[in-house]
Length: 165
Image (cartoon, rainbow, N blue to C red; front, side):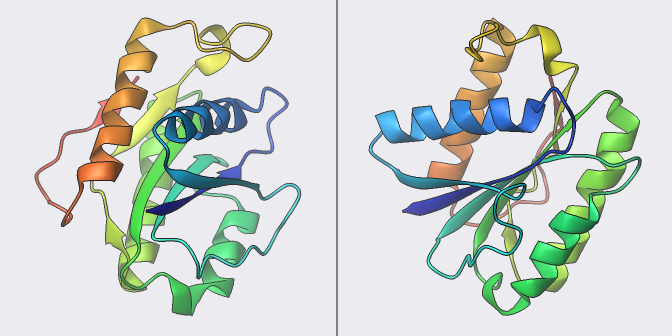
C-alpha cells in the first residue's frame, strides 16, 4: 500500500503538520510506503500513484481551505476507488465537524472510498512537546487506531463512531 499524507494547515501552530509527521513516522516504522505532501509547498500534487490518502487539514471557519478544495478538484479524476481518511485539526469541534462533512461529501461525489470515521483533533497545542514529539497518551492511542483502520479497511462502513481527541 502506498499512502499520501496531505497536509493543509495555514495556522502558525501547524497542528496538522505535527499530526502528519507523527503518522509519517509510524507508517514508516511499519514498512508502509508513504509520502508527506504539504500544500503550503506543493499546491497541486498528483495523487494518481497512491492507494490511500490521509487528508490532515485545519478547518477555515466551518469549511476547508480554498487550497485544499482546489487540490481536490484538480485531482477529480484520481479520487475514484482510493481509500481516504480525513482528519480535521481545530480549536472548536463544531467547526471541525462541518469541515469534515464538506470533505466527505465532496470526495464521495468523486467516487472515493471514505473511511467514515469522523476524526477531529481539538486543541493540539499541548499534546506535542517543543520538538514536535507526541506526549499525549490518549492521542497516541487514537493515532494507532487510525493507522489500523487505514491498513485494515476493506470497504467503508456507515456505522463508525466519531473520534474527537
